[in-house]
Image (cartoon, rainbow, N blue to C red; front, side, top):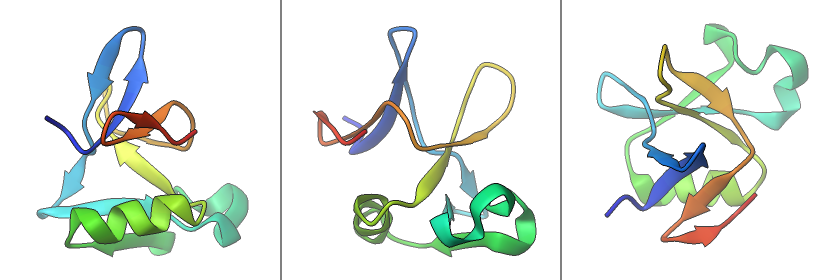
Length: 81
């Protein structure tokens, strides 16, 4: 079971990883949080969960390409956003 996922159109989308790391977006970067220079990379899922609870976005897989999202996120089956 996925700890972190996005539920969209009835599908659970897992986090996208970059070189084995979770990719998050800092809310302080505002409209530029999706830029590579503002990526926050973390090794552990626990650290990703902590940052998500602080308002960070996370890059997840989609039908076409990974996308940085903040809505419809679940942690351990419980809705976060």
